[in-house]
Image 1 (spheres, rainbow, N blue to C red):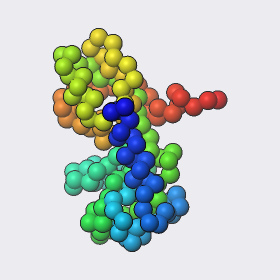
Image 2: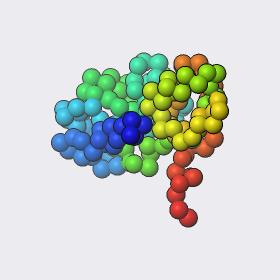
Image 3: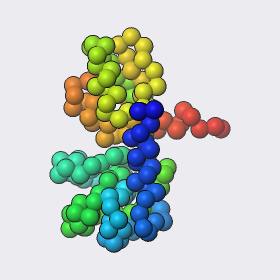
Length: 160
């Protein structure tokens, strides 16, 4: 149950708000009056995503061509000042990766789970999990090696 909470919170952030923006449409500054919001920021240069991360923005997903970022009104103003476009997020843009993490100690499992990943399987020293990019960065920052097995976990779960 605990591992589903981060995903549920993300979906709540998308669903909440006084005014729902249509996917791909610009998000106005007024949309942030009801609280934080997930937005898509189109980018042509991957370095722009690195720049957002280094400036402390909460980048949930970093894909080629866009980032999904959680912003409050202050963050939205900063993004606006950077002349970046903010668009409504489509559910399909919330990409999660399937990852493999190797632990050096069984106690590391708790630390990995606490990052917010959804653990699928644990075999010996290896954890298989699905995770947003923000959680992958947290795991790497904690010193764990991370291998991305699948770029989009839906490729493994969608029916033909």
